[in-house]
Image (cartoon, rainbow, N blue to C red; front, side, top):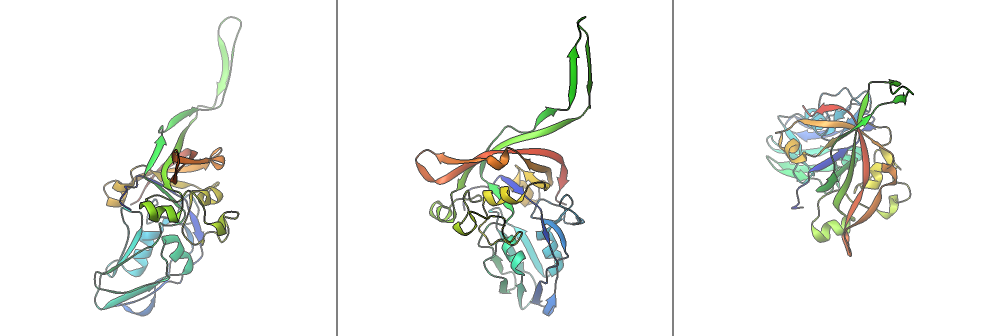
Length: 286
């Protein structure tokens, strides 16, 4: 994937306690569990409480902390793929649960054995995330609050308003790969535009442990009413030079978004939209 990913919509998901283990210089088969609660990938504070979809923990940082940051590094690369690196002496192996394996995009639950400073990179982009290299995006637009106003016969006006406004953003994601075959054929970045055949009629099955590859329709089938993270500055967030992102909800008419060819007559790339986001708050990844 040589293309740059600029956009990420990351939705929260609820996990039970995850019995992850590691064999490394710290011991054999030592328990490194993730606590039960709500998580989000990348766009969440590592120290989130995890008590609700609007205050999730960040799973990559939580996994690194559980494994021991002096022994292991867990990170997202500029490609959007997750990489696990063993930092200590001897060899190291991590055994993920099926849910965490799928959420992070790994093809196997066993990561390693890895020698010192050796790495294993996920085969797929993380699930419950929509990555895109391009988008048609008008930015945040103010939407007026509730008001009831009438003009009086003498030219004055009488009315009531709630004094509130909201922020809305309409986005069409562009140049997504059609599916995994198209991704491989044209070395495309971004989340797939189409589901695999086994999930096409039931993309929410096994939530949140669906096997990758993920797709935009799978997010639209599972994100309603959940506070998501959104950024159009993904390279900077991955590099650690920017920490802020937007907390958003995906609202109608997003769930009727259309999939079209990005380039007329060319089958490998798709645009999807419009997706309508409403702004809830600012978030920070620290």
